[in-house]
Amino acid sequence: MKKIALVLLLGLSLLQAKGSIDFKYSDVETRKFPTNQDYILSYNNVLKDVRTSVVNISTQKNVTQTVNPLMNDPFFREFFRGYQNIPQERIQRALGSGVIISEDGYIVTNNHVVDGADKIVVNLVGDKKEYEAKLIGKDEKSDLAVIKIEKDDLNAVSFYNSDNVKVGDVVFALGNPFGLHETITQGIVSATGRSGVGIVEYENFIQTDASINPGNSGGALINSKGDLIGINSAILSKSGGNVGIGFAIPSNMVTSIAKQLIESGKFSRAYLGVNISDISEDMSKFYNNNFGALVTGVEDETPAQKAGIIRGDLIVAVNSKEIKSASELKNIIGTFAPNTEVTIKFLRDKKLKTAEVKLGSLENISPSGAVSYNGIELRDIDAQTRSRLMLSQEVKGVIVTKVDPKSDAARIGVKIGDVVIQVENKEITNTKEFLHATKSKSKKRLFIYRRGGVFAVVL
Image (cartoon, rainbow, N blue to C red; front, side, top):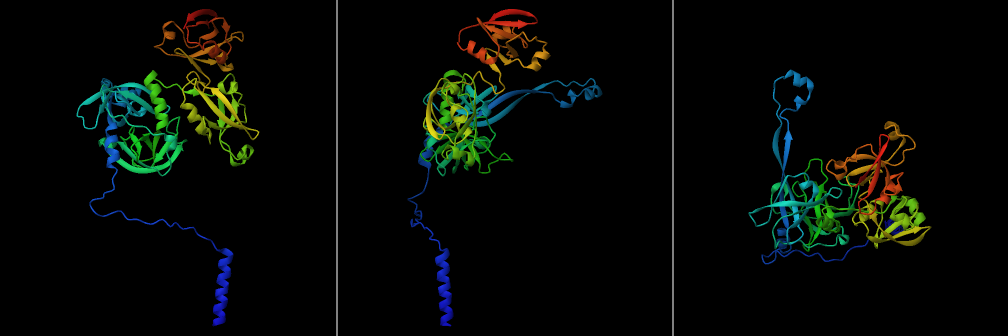
């Protein structure tokens, strides 16, 4: 028996020696919360001040609709001949939230909360009076808008640098879900830099599990110090209710966009002029195992080309902010105003290089290749357009594809199908030449070809 026991022990010891693991254990002491009535864990001191910075927003929209949509069908119109299907107007109402960002009445909210509203009404915490708000500006691509009420001495929220937000930070979502005023929910930051969600074009969301429900949109996401880290924007849910996945627009993006909306009523994004993509792990080996935004193309006469950036460069930082993906580069460039000077770091042949870049404006550039100028949209003339409009090969220029009916261009007679062949003394053959010829803000003489004749307009 003793021999058997000895063999077993020896076998176990050899087994342990061969496959043993030294597990690491924490020696942190577990402490219980005091149970006496003199000590209650609460965030009331943090929330009591900031809650007055969050407002309730209600909107009204006048909607015209027919009583019976079937009457739009010719068959039913004939069948119910004599029936009067008179259009009726109704008021469509919606609720949302907003955050006070200045003592004199500026409030930031989501664009989708106020978009298309004929009337915007704001209710303040502890104030029974209703305040009608004016829309100052909106940015659909980030889902942000700024409104203003006529009242002073408001409690403006304090902002926190959202670049310093960490996963696991305790956060609170403040708003008016389902019209229930002054509702606060608690959670943590689940993720940062979320993009590719498909909610808006420019996405750099803070993800949280704090309950966000209908009516919370435009409300505040704050940290445990009481500072704003984001504006609640959307939830990921098939039912429309909270499932623990909510998204907030980071405060740094909010301040950048809100400032320009207040100053000019619109947000103009900066433009670098590169085509970019993400890289794989295998590809990163060519760049010292770094990740970033891979330049797959550089457009002519753009800030990127002028700075010497070429295809194959891997952009890894903008103004010392690390870039790890194409979406991160798109988002950070999209927060800058045109003509901003930035420092871009990139890898080329495994060497780190730096370029000083003065960003351009995205305002006159569209993904479709069209350009805008004072109420008109213009494109290059392709073979299909030339054939459809029966334009001879001798006609060179850019074709007008859209005209804003409220613009000066429409007033002076510019029409769709017109071809701009010259700006001042410069003949035009494509949209890039047109942009270059019209880059100054002064009025220009545009020479237009129409049906075999040429005339000039001032625009």
